[in-house]
Length: 243
Image 1 (cartoon, rainbow, N blue to C red):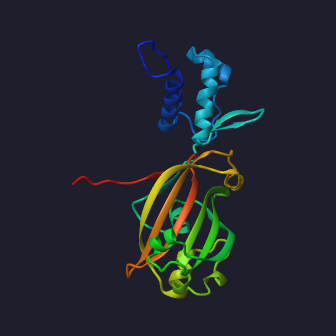
Image 2 (cartoon, helix red, strand yellow):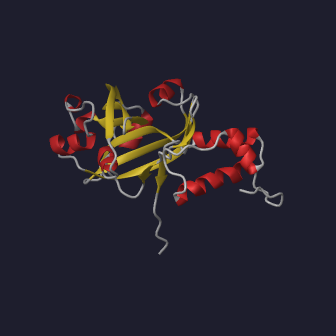
Image 3 (cartoon, rainbow, N blue to C red):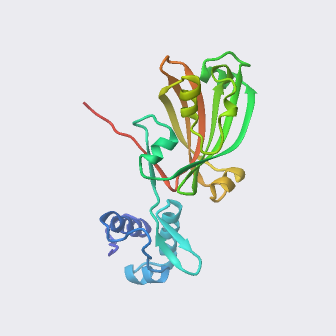
């Protein structure tokens, strides 16, 4: 990189783009060690503060990992999840050759408050079952998910749900409820202290808040889910057809 005074792009962005280009081209691979802050500064004629800022951004985005006493290494752990197909988390990850795990954090029964009742199209005060789970991929926590289901559709379902159990598979096998589509909404949020501890990230880290309503073949609203997903290692994508 030769930062040019005529280029209005800040030096840290130029360096960031340079590193990303080298990863994309294969010049840098996962596990490769990057030059130190001092070496980057000398190599590209920038300040050490600029080099440090660049590496900090790449670390927050999950592209590199800084190890105390060892240096900075390319990780590029991005996990791609799509809005194109509706599938269970387990099937989605297995289809990508990854190892999914689910840790059941809590199970409780509740009464549907007005907002939840509207989402599930049930009367206010209807009994619902709530599962709170931690999703992991290859041993790394990636999301905390809460699922709310009208208990009348699946009485006794708490007896069938444990660690690494597919909720959707239980619905299909035990209750003959097949979920076929979902309406999803996504926005940026920040992790609180408890969420950060579970996800092994710093408090107030940027995350993706995903809310979804899943429907069965009869068009019934079966599940409302709310998940907090790490934005440093998960990337969502979609596919648009203009014609």
